[in-house]
Amino acid sequence: MSARRLERLVLGAGSTFQNIKAVEFFLCKPLKENALVKDFCTFFLPGIRYHNPNLSLQIFEASENATAREVPGASDGAPPSPTATPAPVSPARTGAQLAPEAVRLFFGEGNGSHVVNLSLYHSPHQLMQRLLDVDAQWQQLQIYEKFLQKKENF
Image 1 (cartoon, one colour):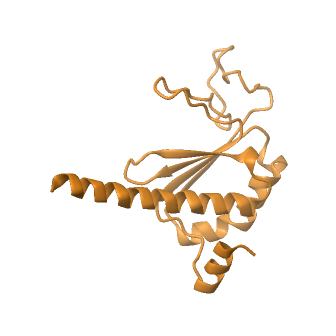
Image 2: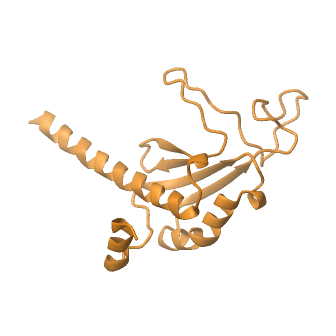
C-alpha cells in the first residue's frame, strides 16, 4: 500500500476536490465499452458527488459514424449530435491538442483547466489518484501565486 493511500486511510480524508468545479470526459468508445471510465463512475463518482454536490460532470461520446479527425455534422450541414465529441481545439498560442480520450478538469473562479490523458491509466484507482494529485498541486500553485503577489506589493 502506498504511503499516500495509507495516510488517507489513517487520517480518514475523503476523496473530495477542493478546487475542481467541473469534470468533462471525452471518449472515443461508448461509456458501456470503456471499462476505465465505467468503473470510475461506478466506484468513485457516488463518493465524489456526495462530498462535492455542486460538481458538474459531463461525458461526451464520439458518435459511431464519426472518425477521430472528422468534425461531426460538417459534411452534411446537419447540427452535431449532443453525444458527439467536439473536434480537438488547437489554441493558436499553445498548439495544444486534446487527447483522443481525456478528462478535462475545470477549476473554480475562472482559474483555467487541466487535461488528463486517459490512455495513461489502467485502473480507476490510478485515475482517481491523479485527479486528487492535480487538485492538490493546483491548490499549492494558488497559494504560491498569492504569496508572490503579496511579496510584489511590498
